[in-house]
Image 1 (cartoon, helix red, strand yellow):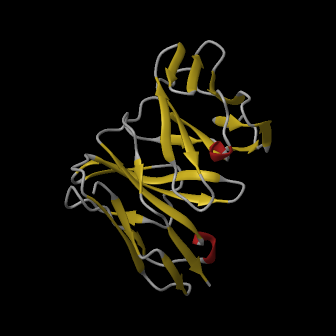
Image 2: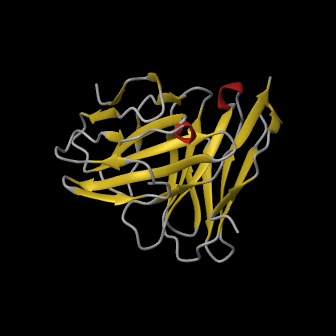
Length: 112
Length: 112
């Protein structure tokens, strides 16, 4: 089982809709979770970090963490064409101070 | 301007010719890290450093060396590059292992 798994997509949603991106991880002891956005040809940039079960909201973005089920998701409300990018889920490996494992990313396309 | 810089941005070299990719940050960050990104494999961590003189292996350290003699710099050294090290390399820094990572612009390396 891969440590961090994401559906590669592409996920296509119409403008204004909710985009739902999912990520599962294998290490039940993982504590720190991150969502990064990467535009084509650019560097990743952090959207959200989440450490506790439940929801965390920041503007149009909501991260959801369920440690019992070992998944973390990202919801994008009122999706815009500018949200079209690859979204990377990252998990800090248990017991390490800085070892981050990234999923392969989900490509999101928001159609006008 | 707060930033992570990498040099060179593009490099074509031949097998076995030692090279160094520099990384520098001006944010006084403790943590720095190197990643490589390959199609179908995603972003994978090579090495990371929690502080000066403290480095640790990520998931794909073979064939790479790093050093952290100063807080702001974290060079990536390929002693004897091989074609399988052809990749897009990113340097990143953050306040700590749990914090938002700021990525450099990337270095596209081709080894022939």
